[in-house]
Length: 201
Ligand SMILES: O=C(O)CCC(=O)C(=O)O
Ligand SMILES: [Fe+2]
Image 1 (tube, helix red, strand yellow):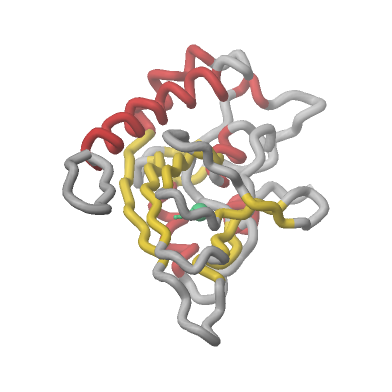
Image 2 (cartoon, rainbow, N blue to C red):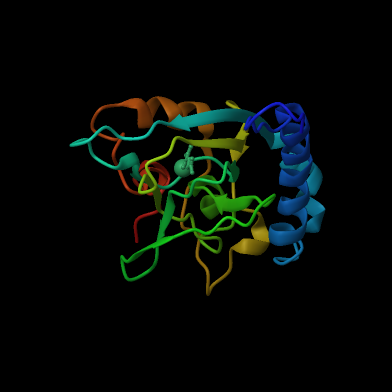
């Protein structure tokens, strides 16, 4: 940091490249290794592209709602988030209660999206989350999102399906799903991929 007043900044290029490296490492160690699916790492990398997004949540005006982002689950594979010191992210637990996520400094938060739920045949949960601005300060986050390539079919590996775990989702293409999800009647759906390609029993 330069000694020039109270300015604080982070070198975003460095953060981006760390996050991009991390996201694949996280897939390998936290998901594939824990499910004995290491042999799918190359296939996973083939399937994946990335989006980097910087979000600014400005301080709400008096009388303005403190909701920065409505409750949703991400649709993609995996999301990692890094924030400035201003908290705001909340997660919903199984009982429908919301709790604040505490980011420790220099840490990332990792969340699975609906596509990871489909790919693991329901084993990895896609967390519902939202942003509530309670600190009366501007909040900044950087998100790196791993997203399936538009035309590559997403299909649970055969190891994820057996008598005890019947196939929950039909294979789908993310590009076609994105067109479905953009429609007014689907955009607020809590679990849009279930509606789109869920197997009905
Ligand atoms: O900025 C955050 O803390 C959350 C962002 C988010 O959930 C999203 O971009 O999908
Ligand atoms: Fe999100």
